[in-house]
Length: 111
Figure (cartoon, rainbow, N blue to C red):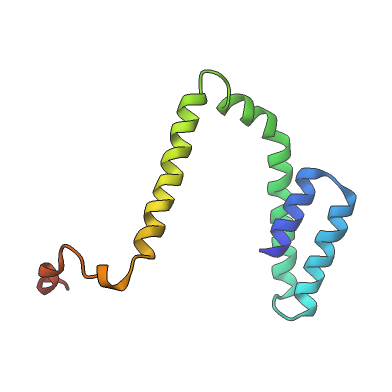
């Protein structure tokens, strides 16, 4: 995750200093023993590829999804996405006293 994120950010920005930083982050993961070298190399390659694709198609995507005719639809989808994440988060984080909610009488039918 560290290697893919850092190399993806470096690929999007194109800054050589960020590539050095991404390399240092990736090497530190191997030195600390939290990842194998192959895992870090695969993450770096994947992050770099996704970052390059994002940088290549960024202007086209912004022009397509945020143009005048698509602004309302894009905003609606973003609102529904954020609202859905909020509902799921509230459901997962609900207090224990609310966890045996409305359908507890159906517990005899559970498999």
